[in-house]
Length: 350
Image (spheres, helix red, strand yellow):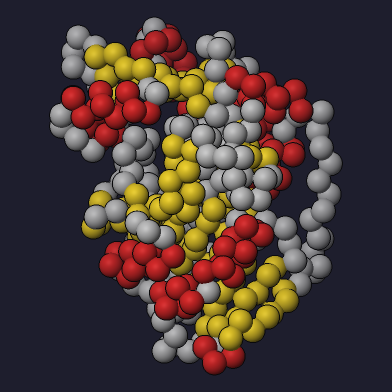
């Protein structure tokens, strides 16, 4: 079953409504008519301090975020990791680490990281951060420290609308069973466990796994294998809306280039694959199901080009994100905040 979502306006139909938030601060809010596009908060006054505005308008910011799931700030001249951290702390008690991450990043300072460091010619598909885990950040902050010459946008997709596009029988199975994630770390095929868990101490890894419901096995060559069953869908703890929330489409072997997948499947035991995603009961997810998930994300993805100093705040449950290929130097910083989990009241999608 495919849900008809023909609500998108056609060419020339997109309109923006501009509402003054506070004339004294010369800050305006633009809400695009096209579904899924981030709300834009902007100023032309170089004296407006974004951290101060955020602190003074927490309730309004929360309302904007729960409406569209993403808010783009422009014209505030934000630059550098320290300024990004200051924005995070203006509205959240603390930033979070990227422990149990699945992509390469560099730490800029404390809990501020670079965005995923994949080659510039590659697309990073839509995903909700740490949706393969049972705990995740509810808020993601992105700062365009240096915009690319071409491309390099951070597209977003509304997880509520993605959920609606996926056939009911697939949604129901993911909601009931969740997703089992298999990971084998290191050996030149994936991040090492030291990178993933941000420690050199195996005891720290074991402690984290025990607290997070992750099963682990130390292999004879010192490598690590983990499996974890996590949620397939989540009900937002504030809005109550059901959202597609997992990374099965990124971990599943069908998402690899055909020649890479063939080589891995021919040379490795299924348990030794760098990554794979299965239904929560351990049975394989069909390739056509994963293809349908990719198609649902693609249909809902929208992108705004970065400019130097732009900041985007997203609700990590309501909205997924990705990265377009790019040319020229590009640097986007990321900070995560406000822990969430399917154990929060109202959050479980089952």
